[in-house]
Length: 135
Image 1: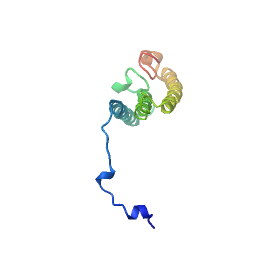
Image 2: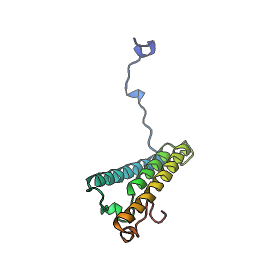
Image 3: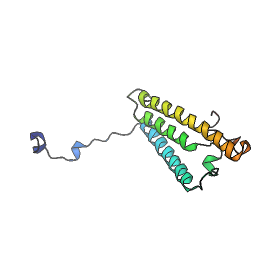
Image 4: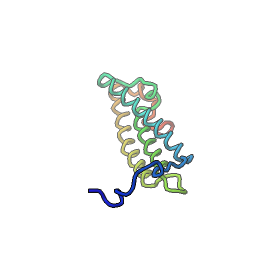
């Protein structure tokens, strides 16, 4: 049974209002799409590898875990898109990004150690774990 309000209303285009996206929304959406694309490409590449081989894809040449970096950038993009008016970031989503970054950072460190044991330190010595020029 429909409510009285729904019975008397017919939906038309006047019910839809699309505001022009802000620069913040544009930047956040662009970052989200780029990071999602990189993450997908990395995951597809990793899935195609033979078991226990060192990745040689261009995304993995400087960073051992670029898909982890992409995940953090996705959260950063969401924190930009979800930011309240007058703020650059949504602090709750930004805290989630920090939580994810710390967890993935620990895993990236373990990944580098595993690669060093499996393939030798010289094979991964010049590669960053997760964030270029930082970690």
